[in-house]
Structures are given as structure tokens and as C-alpha cells.
Amino acid sequence: MISKMTLINIEHNVELPNSPDGSVFYIKTCQRQIIVGLGKSPLKFYDPDHAPEGQVKNFLFGHNAYKFLLETLCGLRSRLLGENEIVGQFRQAFKQFLETDNRDNAFIPVLEKLLKDGKEIRTHYLKDISQLSYSGLARQCLQRKIKTGPVVVLGSGQLAVDLIKVLGKRYQIILCARNLERVQELEQKDHVTAHPYDSLIDVYKYSAIINTISCKKPFITKEKIKIWKQNPQESRIFIDLASPTAFDSEVQLDSSIKLLADLFDLGENISNLKDQKVEKAREAIKEISAKRYHYFKLNFPLNGEESQFA
Image 1 (cartoon, rainbow, N blue to C red):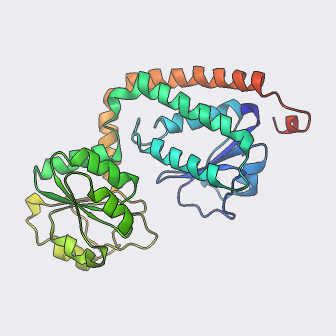
Image 2: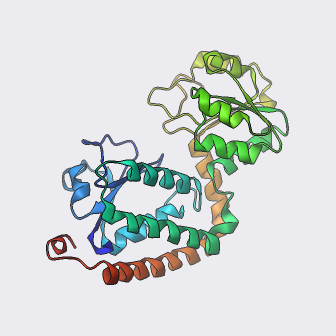
Image 3: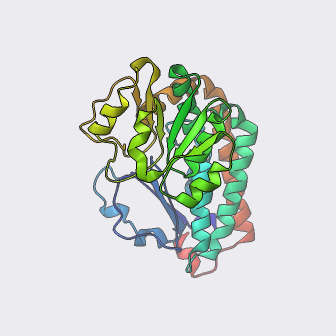
């Protein structure tokens, strides 16, 4: 089964010619897009042989494809080595894959084993670098500027949930998002207060804001930042976790505004101290990938028709 795998790793901002369906597993993050499936199925949605230079970061098969996926799931292919947001993103992509009408059921055991192997690697080798997450790094940036007080979180997705978890013990969270039902659900958590999204302009009076909303068109304008900058500079911080950034190009960036790239830099400084553990994790991934390759070769042998793609 793994011998049939084909994986294409593409830049995150590339527009795919066709939207992937259930014949492949597809995941998109702020750093990459991955299309992976059995045989030639991924090529229906993106053809690396005819792609513009620089769009394709990896084009892998078989054992190497599984190893790459496992490294990605463990955060070892991220700029923030060991970051754990990818786990939630992967599980959500897997859930969407299972809900598609034409899903390739033959690929499900591979993804299930991948999740199991990823959990094993994180538990044994990467447990102590869990602070390498967007929410954890956002907390570090925030605490350097503001010790207490309200923090506005824009958005209600998984990243917003993670922020509530890591910030809620110290800060009062003001949650502002379009999804009213989701906001009401999260409002039941301690330290969370809802703010109407139709009054979004009012949140700029707060000193600390963290944006998790991704959008193609920037919505944080120069006028909104002008309102926000009326707060004293020494006690304000605006962290944008969106990619591409939610800030309009006319916004003047300064030290009180932190973009995702700034968090990457902070995370890289921290991860330099974790190289030994990361290297052990990489070695373990090599061994587990080889073990999975032989497991699927033994338990899911290819038939004659399928072997042409091996």
C-alpha cells in the first residue's frame, strides 16, 4: 500500500487547477499544500512535471512519501520545529476526507497508522518542545508586553481555541468572530466574553489583540490601526497569526505589531536548543517509516493491476 503512495508538496499560495476530491488526501496550511494518494490519483489535481519553477517543493513516492508525511505531522517540516498545530489540521483534513462521497477507502489504513505513529514520536521524543506552537509563541510575545488585562482574540477556529487554553488562566479573553454559534459555545469556557462581530471596530480600543482569521483580502486597515495606536505604545501589542497577513499594505508596521514571520523567528531561536531531541525524532521516524512500509507490503499485497503504480 505504501509502495503505491504519491505525494506532492506545493507552496501554500499556489492556486490548484482542480479542487482535490476524496480520491486523494489533501491538507493545506500556512506553509504548504499536500496532495497524497495511491498511484496516479494526485496528478489529476496538480502535475509537477508541468508546474512553474518553485511551486513544487517535494514530489515523492512510496516509503519516502510516508516518511515525509510523518515528519510533517510531527512538526519537523515546519519552520517552528515540533509545532503541534499541524496535528489538529491533519485530523480536520482526515475528517473531511472521510466525509467525501468518493473517498479512496484503501488509503484510510495508511492515514490511521500515520496518526498512530505521529502520536508515538511526539510522546517519546517531542513532548518537551510543546511550547513550539503558534499559541505558545503568541503567549510569549504577549507576556513580554502585557502581564494582565483583557486580550481580544479574532476568530473562533482551532487556533482561537488553543489561545483560549494557553491564555485563559492569566488573561480575560474577549472573543470576536462571525460564527455566532461557535462563539456562544466557546463563551461557556472560563475567562471568555463574546464581542459582537458587527461591532468589530470597537475591539481596536483594546491594547492586546490576536488575529486568527485568514482571508484573501486584508481587513485590518490603516484607519483601524490608527484607533488601536491610541493605546500607550509600551502596553500594546497586535499579533497576526494569519497567512497571508490580515494587515492592509498601507499599515505602518512597528515593534508593537507581530506577524507570523516574527513568531517563526522566535520559534527558530528556541528550537536551536532542541536539536538533539529533534534529531532523535528524525531517526525514529526513519525506523517507523521502514516498519510501516514492510507492514503494508505484507498485509496489503498489490494485485497485478495496481503494481504498475508501485
